[in-house]
Length: 203
Image (cartoon, rainbow, N blue to C red; front, top):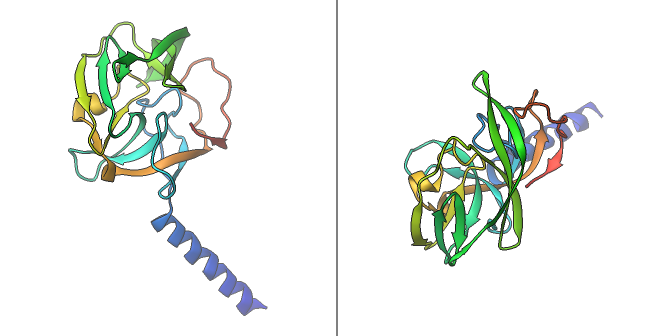
């Protein structure tokens, strides 16, 4: 019986190691680039296999210009599409995303609180929340056609580097798709908001 349990435990450990190497990654969130969806200390489940990323998906990617640097970002535009970013708004094939300010919200970042706008963005039927800093303005991006590449943006639009800085992300640089939050960092970065669920399907 003891030998059986030891063998079973060994198989479980080997199975978990193989799954981590070939199927899953467990990235942790550092910083507020992806607030409000992801906040510092969150532990995520990233799935390497399955379908290709879709619009609105959260992905783990290899930085296109910096070796050994991983980023968490949201997919906004897909291979084959024409994308532009004008007046704080993503455009696909000449049509802008619909944007609606929900309310003002306070974000705790680097020891201080910053007042931002919580904005709902809808792009071709996909909805997600982003943060807008009224005190900052993003530069416009001229239209680009994506060839086997994705355009990714930070949800904290005025405080995160993304494809506006390093360009479209080649498909082979998309490492995994975020599927779940395993645990929530404590406390959350958004001041005065209810406690978040530890286990939650994303996005």
